[in-house]
Amino acid sequence: DSGVTQTPKHLITATGQRVTLRCSPRSGDLSVYWYQQSLDQGLQFLIQYYNGEERAKGNILERFSAQQFPDLHSELNLSSLELGDSALYFCASSVAGAGTGELFFGEGSRLTVL
Amino acid sequence: DAKTTQPPSMDCAEGRAANLPCNHSTISGNEYVYWYRQIHSQGPQYIIHGLKNNETNEMASLIITEDRKSSTLILPHATLRDTAVYYCIVRYHMNYGGSQGNLIFGKGTKLSVKP
Image 1 (cartoon, each protein chain N blue to C red):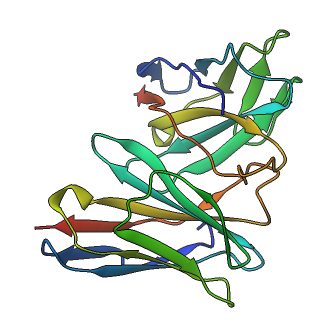
Image 2: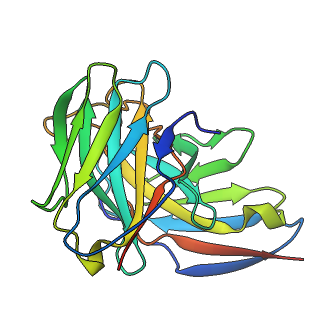
């Protein structure tokens, strides 16, 4: 158990819909990272937040947005969903800016868009 | 982050040492080598990291060549539960500019441990 909690574990929805994925980082961790893993793309970095502020942005679509709240949990919002958005979405956390390089990953949220 | 090159797949007999190579010929002096693994569809798991000295922990050993252009992750006694995709990643240890700690994953090496 990494200490990172992601909900929901599984989600099935239809194209055009909007979903929110939630992540609770390990206690004391200030940084939260979101990754997307689809069969053909591997693990893709989406976005990072540190203590409520966006710190780095990767291959995140404009239809996707995220935020980190004062209690440090984070949400990833996916809108106007397309079939290609079906993937595993992982959240990870680290103490600060991950100076040690150790990110702790949750078990992921599996999104299926039909 | 510097790019890494890993073989797409490897097999290892249970109980034997698994040696996973990684090439990172463009690594810079400030970049560390990190190893993560992902078992089936679980979240990636940190294994070990190093700069230029060999490192060992309870999971594995990391051997980095003197010129730092390649490294090898060693699982001393592989078990069936070590079957996973292993990722070699190079990145700055501390935060630099806009890159604040995110890891960039490649395709990794799929290690199959066989009985």
